[in-house]
Length: 419
Image 1 (cartoon, rainbow, N blue to C red):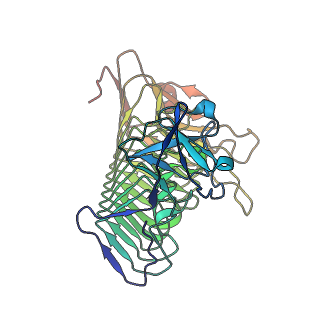
Image 2: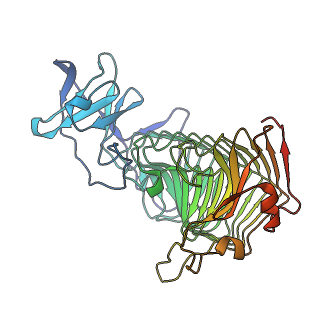
Image 3: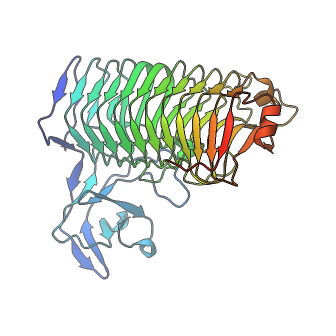
């Protein structure tokens, strides 16, 4: 078990295969009826975060059979392959899988790197199996400035994988299998570049609370470029709560259960030249979890993206629900421009802007009257399955969408095949 509190300007470079591991080995095990047991006293840290219904995402700790995380349950009736039960009153742990000849580990250390020292560099390491709480990175640099995390693999940590703050860089990493979220940031002048970020939120946190691939909050001048973000349980790339002047470009974002790219209660961003495919696989109702989703935000440009929409999915969606600001007033979905995108539907699907606020609300007509626009986009769809559109409240055809002032230079082409 390793834990480091870096000093200002320190550099940590790993030789090939170097591992920092936050777990300890458990055992020996003995057979107890149909289960396997070992004496253990593992501290249960305070609950943090919101779990999906039916999941025990927190408090854990996390248990591993080899490199496979096991799911914690609360009763013997739930025990089965891939699951474990803590019995604190008996001072033991039960699991259904036979551990003979395999290593069983439990996460016990919260972070691999954590300090407020500036200008720390971490490179070439595997950082795994830390008992990081939700929203706290196993590599925790969000309270410092100038941290650079590069060419590392960050995997199997209980909560958040890696976080950085102002002037932080997360580049050329593989970030996967973390319990809540792959990566996070807040501050100014932050860069996420050329990372592979996949299969995060394995503990079952509620994505709408905060879970998935990457989440950036309270940030300005952020660049998210050249990343491959896929198969996360939640949004892929999420900029939330007063992001300003963010640029999300040249990413491949696919098969995330939530929205592919999500810009929420934020301002003046650019989403361009991304390839965004088949996101929103959780089937969330209404118009949520679009491939590109702009909610309660203003001044966002969405352009030159290539989008492949799953059957029943949403391509690009502006959403307003009259979200309240802490200091009073409402966030407003205004001044958003969606243009020059190529969208391919593989079945039924839709695009546009929608609100479900009260009609007498100040935001009651914000989509239509808020200087939002769709223009010059191309929509390709199977023959006899034209896409639907929405502008305000009700679904409309493409011709009606144009009569509402949208897509004067756009086109729908039927009979196209998804490439």
